Length: 167
Length: 402
Image 1 (cartoon, rainbow over the protein chains, first blue to last red):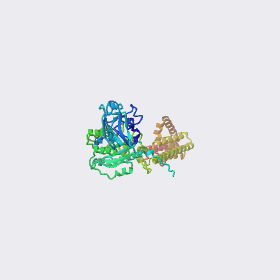
Image 2 (tube, rainbow over the protein chains, first blue to last red):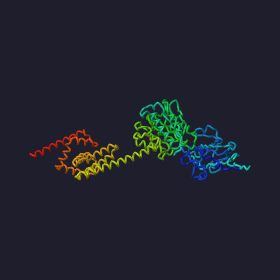
Image 3 (cartoon, rainbow over the protein chains, first blue to last red):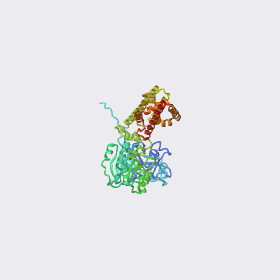
Image 4 (tube, one colour):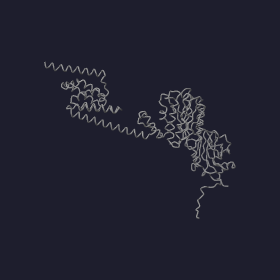
């Protein structure tokens, strides 16, 4: 089954990020055009942690995730939560993550990390918690975040057309 | 137009019973809260404001963030004052309330009123501040009332740890600074960040600057800034019109006076008087009083014959000389010299003394002069001395007759 970039299914109005530096927003890592530019990045502010909440416009299956970052400041431990709303730094440890990925320097250069596919079969929203970074430095930098997966076979409401009733 | 969700933490501890802020700390605080709620909800229709109390039996959320101003104002009534303030708990509850805001686009802000001592350690507060910063919550602190135990420093440290690109502020309000709400009007807590504040804030600030008490049209400038502005503008126009009318009347009067008097010096004198009076007029706010005084002066000068106008001119010269000196030293000097000339002239001297001898006329004129007290001892002395001089003059001709 071929996996597609899930960029088109992100509900932008609901995207949230905590602990980012002003002018180093989540859009720099997530939006098309911005994410391809390594000069534009998402950066953490008070400490090295980042919490990103991404809702989707329809239910998706998540197969793999690609996060790009510099060698030192790139993220290392990344916890992913499916369908968990209203999460904050205070309650990240209250729920078991759907999957935990340890990013290697190879992953940070563009190699996608494959997730536990069975845990992400019907994802309406995804919370990404970046716990620490490669060099244990104060600020985490993220240049690109991309998801690969497929949409669940639901009725595509846009495809519905009113059929002319000729009788 | 910042889209914001705000939680306001009220201090309702026993310390707020203190009356060092008028009428007491709690009421002053309540006024300030009302003002801030109004400003926040008006600066953006989607802004929401919530209120919680930090003392009493525990932290209590009175209203969760809402855009309904009535709801916010209503909750402030009938609050119990008691217990001690729990700053840390208050801030954390406020953060939780903000976290569950419905519109996630809203930026989060906590405004804390701290009127009682802070028992927490600086370290604890800084840790809380870090947490707020991490959750992108801005924090404003209004520090008033108690100053003991390094409270200002602790609060400064708290705000410093939260502050992110100047979005958090702290204001210290000493009891002597006047009403709490008036002080807050000019601070960034009220006006918002960098954009000069909302129209509401600007109008309220302008009203406060020009003195709310002076605004007696029966309109609250805070509630109807446009109407207040219109009233103020028409008031100023009317004032300008009156000023121009008064000036014209004075000029006319002086011209008449100049025509009637054969002495050209009188014309200069009267002109000088009107200039002096106009300078006076600018200094004074009391428009009508001044106007009548001016008219009286003009009338007194132009009324009878040259001698009366001259006498009026002299006595007025005394009153207005200071203004004239300020305006133009040369003119003043010339005037003084011409007055001396007239005084040296014996005929005009007698004429003048005749007028000066008319006691009721003199006291009339003196009482009509602005800033001159007829009962002043020095003025009385002067009049007495003039009368004596008049007697001598009377003696002289009688000697010559003999």
